[in-house]
Image 1 (spheres, rainbow, N blue to C red):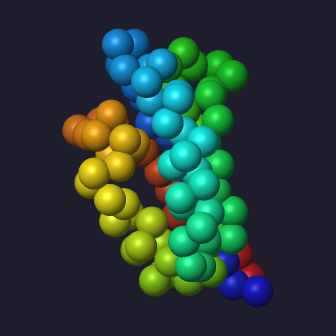
Image 2: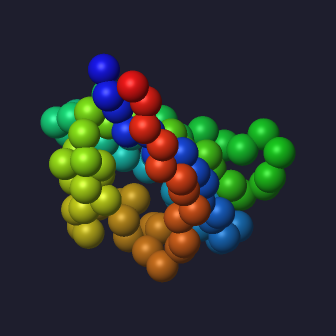
Length: 93
């Protein structure tokens, strides 16, 4: 099965870190519920403070594109607005 994998991280300023950590479970649940999302998770980095690591596996490019269009009204979108996301894309066969 072909799948698209996104892996990356987001660094959170210390004044937003606790608030972002609180909304992660809801955000992950919303992402996993989207059509074409096989798996998605966000975990704290074991090595770098205030960094969250993210990994998602998606069925196709349509699902990846949908992942990058979350509701701007979501708590995740509000709390992480303006923060760069660093990620790479790979494909499996």
